[in-house]
Every structure is written in structure tokens, then in C-alpha cells.
Length: 433
Ligand code: PMP
Image 1 (cartoon, protein in one colour):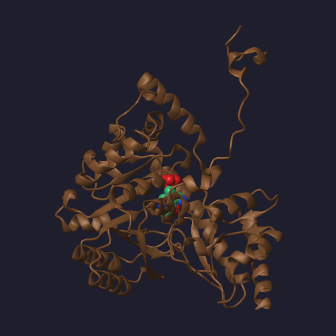
Image 2: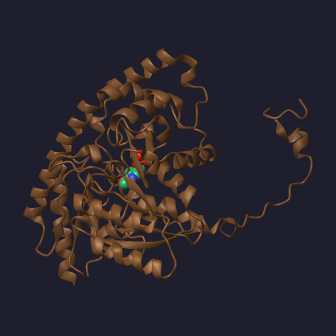
């Protein structure tokens, strides 16, 4: 059996006849790119580790409620997809995505339904990939991009490896502060800098749960049009409104300004089935002008060729379920949010404020200055409650006295127990000040 790998006695193999030199440890750190070196993922790692503590009420993770996943329908849709499409369900597919899904999106859910065509729709492997590939097609090292403060830390994580300079724009209870945005744009213009894009989450923002008002949406479009700045509108939560009146998306408002022509819009609309169906399906989309979707195709070819064909077909089979499923989610999240808000109002010490979301999965707490929620987290975990520390949502630092709470996957009793423990922990911190 000489020279045959995988046999029991390898000592006689031709591969071990020479003495083996001791392998040196590779210079890992020196070899990595500056881009990946700049990514800080420790908050998320710590969070996932803490989630393992038995009996912990975890308000930190942003997970949809698992008991609401339509498991029977997903099983049925998988069987139907395999039955309907046979081998095509597991063959390579086009980079743009499964055409029936893109056609449906163009006609139904996308802003500007009926005016956009499948050519304006790029299917992505999760909204997270949309952010990565948008960064890939726009950012050269040193380019300026604008982010609201605080913002979704996963977006910052996607953008950082492309080495942009971040300019942070403050927000208040109605979203981005437009006077501050005008000032930032004016200052940058005075330095001869035009930001490549502004990244914003107008509906039930992650992490604050806040919604950008209609008036501010119009103003954002005015300013970005005036300065030639693209808008990356991230809207994974838009379908999950449980109170207040719906507000048209930036993409929709912009289409009204272009007379319905998506190719004249500077807004890229990103959304996902992660929060309406199930995140593990990893199906999302970007709707944008054709010059942009054409570049996204190139970027995606080099990333993963295409989103898994079978998953796209399963999602397509599930489309008729969406209205019923989103209604179920809205009702359930409304109940959980209402309950959490009531318990927060009852339990929290004076001086702690919270947002009141009209949808989505999150709300945001601001504690008195001097309390550091990062330092406080281990003490909260001792009391069996966890949250997401606020400072990881600040691209340029800050927010030490803030935290994000997720209400989407907690049961009502867990909310009672978790908020009581949180309030007790905060009281302890205030006593230390
Ligand atoms: N954008 C925002 C604002 C998010 O909150 C998330 C997920 N938490 C994503 C994008 C990524 O979502 P997906 O699961 O579709 O990749």
C-alpha cells in the first residue's frame, strides 16, 4: 500500500520518510489587511457569549421571535420548490437573482411598485450583503461617507474594511437632524469633499427604534440632491409598523420627483425577508437605478456568484403568505413593545429616558451622564439580564450612557423579570456616581 493516503499505517508512507522541519507560527497579525484590522467585532462576540448564561433574559440580540417562524409553510414551500423546479433548484443561477422573485418585488413590494422593472432589483444574500456590496462599489480608501449617530453597527462593520472616513450626523427623536446634516455637508463642501453616500435607516431604526419624519425625508432628498450625495436607505423593518401612520420611503418620495423614472433616482433602497419570513433564508434585495444594479452584479459575482437558488425559490413560494405573516408579527411585536414600555415606565429610576417605537424590534435607553453601560453589563448579567451596549452603535465613539433593548423575542414574563433586574442594576450604578 505504499504511497496510499488514508491507510492505517502511514509510518511506511513515502510522505513521512524525510524528517519534518518544525513549522514556524505564521505572522498572522502582520499579514492581515488594514481594512480587516480596523473592524471591531468584540461587542457582538461578548454578547453571544453572555447569551449562554442559564436563566439570562437577553434583550441584547436582535432576533426575530422564533415561535413565529412559519415552519409548516416553509417545509411545504421547500417541497413545492423542489417539485416545481427540479434540478434547477440546485443548479447555478443568475447573479441578478431568480426572475419570478425579482418580477414580484418590482410589481408589489418595492417603492414605486409598477414603475421599477426586474432590472432595478438585485437579490442579495441577506441585507448584510447589500451593505457590503454597496460599500464595495462606492468606497475608495479615504472617501467620506455619512452615517446617522447612532447607527446599525453591522453597517459600520461592512463599510470599515473599504477604509472610508466617517462623518457622523446627529439624530433626535424624529431621526436625522437636518440642520446638522446641512452644516456637515456645507463644511465638507468647503473642504472640497463630497460624501459618496449617506447611510440611513428611516423606519424604526436599529438601534433606536426611531422613525424619520416625512418633512425630514423631503429635506434629506433636497440636501442630497443639492450636494450630489447618494442615499443608501436601509429598510428591513418597514413592514413591521404597529402604530402610527405609514410614511413613504425615501425611494418612493424620490420616484415621485423623477416622474416615476427609477434610473434618475439617487436613492438605493435595501430591504430583506429576514424580519418578515426568517433570517436564515438569507434573502434580501436592493432596488436602485440600473447603472447601480449593473455594478452590484459585478460586485456580487466576486462575492458569492448568486444567492442560493433553492432559498430564492422557497421565498417565492412563500410570497402569498407575507400579508398574513407580517400581520402576525406586527400584533405580536406590538404586544411585547407595549408591555416593555409599561414596565420600563413603572420600574426605571428617574433620569432614565427611552424611545417609543412605532414598529420594528428595538427601543433605546439613555441613562444619566456618568453611567457607563459597557462597564455595567457584567453587573447586569449577574442579575440575569443583558442588553446591547450603546457605544458600539457610534461609528466615531460616544454613547457610553446608552443601550439598545430588543423586545421582539422576549416573553411577557421575561420582560417583567428582565426589566426589574435592569432597573435594579441601574439603581446600583446611580448609587456609585
Ligand atoms: N440592516 C439593518 C438595519 C439591520 O438591523 C440588519 C439585521 N439586524 C441588517 C441590515 C441585516 O439583515 P439581514 O439579516 O437581512 O442580513
